[in-house]
Image (cartoon, rainbow, N blue to C red; front, side, top):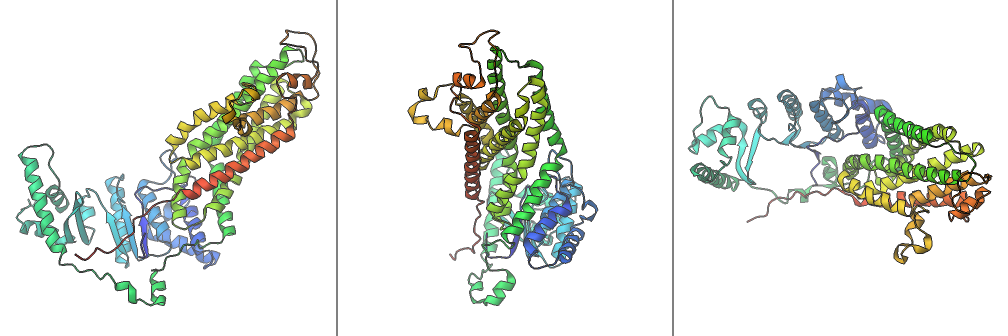
Length: 525
């Protein structure tokens, strides 16, 4: 973070995997330049960036990630550079742009950087163990070892500099390999290790003497006029360029696209729902005798627990990864947290509700639940899934990574099962935690489905008895402490859970910010 109009390309390339290269660039161009350029002009900017960064041939290929096949690692790195080039910054800083790439892809990335430098850009890159070809592409070199400067100057003069210090090089050894060996410590505790330490200390002292000859103009920016500072980008903007409604529209389109393009994930989730429904349908066959009361209670409890489990687990696994991308984009002032979160929450609803409807449509006729309560059942299970998904979103938003969120998941599920409305009497809950049942995810889903199923039922007096005979559904509800329960109360409670979870998730995301070191000129000694 500095007043310099510089772009920073991180080591890790983080993109939404199901977006194409063109869509990724167009999304950022519209957010950054939407107010300034027409649609045709924005498209020209996207095409020009793809041409400059050699991405035209993969323009309509999805970006992908470690699990989803997309563009190559080198192309993904060039896409990262293209995204930072939208504002045409004069300085580009890259953190290990060749790490993780093979020699060909690394050379392609460095060739792209060379083209940008030749066009007038200042390119600063951290490079670890470059090949000779990559090394010779750069103009200047700042060589660091153990945090100390070893050399600063032209790449072409580095070999002669170290030769003049008395460290002769063999002609068949490349300059990159030669200087890396010079400033690297030998392993072990023998004479070689001590010799390398002495050599590095001497090189560092020589570099320090050379650095003392360099002068810094610390107050250079004080006399710059406001107009010049604006042109150079030396002002610091704390506001996003695009309006909140444009942000919402673009973010909603991206979230919706990401959800429904992941066909493999959708298929797996659909198979989970159908297979679970088939298992229940193969075991339960509900009748109207006394034993069917317990069967209904058990089935509804399993449905509530399973729905919570599946909805929360999928969100908890996926959202922390997305949060890493979003945190970077919010930190770069691409958009605000509020429109992102609202668009994300709304875009998730169709898929979550659709999977619940699929589950309900399969299980309802198989197990023999009340026929005239089918629509209510679908609505209640869908609402229950959305509430569970929103709770998973909350856990993911406050967790620094997926490992922490997955660690929180089991105890939260256990607490929800304990306070689901039938495992412990309300009056026996310890006083200090009597508020927990009121926010129980499973409890309200279970309660709503129980009222929906038992209301209006008539039971026979035959069959194995489980306590006093219950002739009606209302009698059965009273037996399980649900005589005061209602669908309306369950719906209101779950709506409150969704609202509170969304609000706390928004606060959690807002509190998650990237931290930067401020660049300052060195102090005068």
